[in-house]
Amino acid sequence: MTDLTALTIAEARDKLKAKEFTATELTQAYLDVIDAANGALNAYVSVTHDKARSMAKASDERLAKGEAGALEGIPLGVKDLFATKGDHTQACSHILDGFKPDYESTVTANLWADGAVMLGKLNMDEFAMGSSNETSYYGPVVSPWRANGSEDKIVPGGSSGGSAAAVAARLCAGATATDTGGSIRQPAAFTGTVGIKPTYGRVSRWGTVAFASSLDQAGPIARDVRDSAILLKSMASVDLKDTTSVDLPVPDYEAVLGKSVKGMKIGIPREYRVEGMPAEIEKLWAQGVQWLKDAGAEVVDISLPHTDQALAVYYIVAPAEASSNLARYDGVRYGLRVPGKDIVEMYENTRAQGFGKEVKRRIMIGTYVLSAGYYDAYYVKAQKIRTLIKKDFEDVFAAGVDAILTPATPSAAFKLGDKELAADPVKMYLNDIFTVTVNMAGLPGISVPAGLSENGLPLGLQLIGRPFEEEALFQAAHVIEQAAGQFTPKRWW
Image: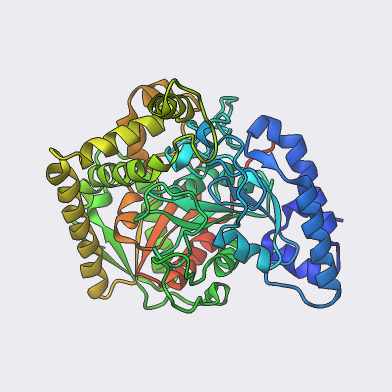
């Protein structure tokens, strides 16, 4: 029998239906790999062995009866931001210590309804605030990748670092993730995996711990474009419990793969050529343009004039929404409670000990920009510029552009514990420079592996699409994937 964990979701799905192995065997293969590797990678904060075996057994029964769902028997990892009934759901924060919800998020409920198997909860930056997975209460995730000739640990990106590392290291067939400013696309680019942030409203946010409600969107991280298309089909749905959920039919994304991009118009935004961008990122971008041209796409230069203000706007809007959303964590109803002489001191003690440094920083920034004297100067102004950023994209799409090609990140992954980045949060925030505009405008964006850096680390390209036209992104991303090939880390763990 082949190594079961080497199979993609599409391959495993077909072989399960052909009865070449059972869902129980596939699930056990993943559990064995997790138990052996998680000590080195720290991708999982909770492994649900018994639940996984029980779900796999139920899948085998449905497969035997010919009642297989779209993801029947496929073992997945779940980012610790999604509520899973009766299981560890703590957004990797101390303040949610011991919290196990008695409800299921819509996204995970959709996956289980399609027959997927839950392996456990994946590590992440605390409350999804971070670009390196170093802010987790449970310690950093270590990327399965290493630079050529080096044994230095590197980051998997964030906030969905556990999801990206687990997929890259074959510790799950695919994973759920979330993206508020790049938290699916940046870790996917850093780990040689495929990550798609769907259009805002395509996937329900119900039962997902909120960071910034007008920006958060769930999506999958997978090994290839086909697997990400399969996962998004199951994750997406209209949901009456989420008022921002959009009632549109969910297409069969897998069906567009291999379809010609001849005649598709791809925009190249001049504002994404930022000062100091490494030559290898420029080269990768040019190579992506050539691949799409060779496949028949028309490539045009475009302008997105408010791009240079996007990062500043994001770091006003996102902390403002976070400061409001995180006010609910007070030690009264659930999670951590640190006693005090009265209720005010109890609140203060609980929040002081429960939240990590980065989360506190963002709550304070958010509270400041929402305060009476600064609301108009910062928050209102940021929202006005956000509208202009959205209009930039609308104008480009109105001119006939089908998708926009950009780098996914300004560099390859960096070392764990990089002192320069740790000392200057703004430098860390610059990792999101190519991704935040997509969240600001509520658009879909996909990161697809496109090559390796000079020192052998993955680099990704990003495609940005029109609202609710994820099919065009899968179509174009598949062309890049076919040209670039796939990238897997050499096993050291």
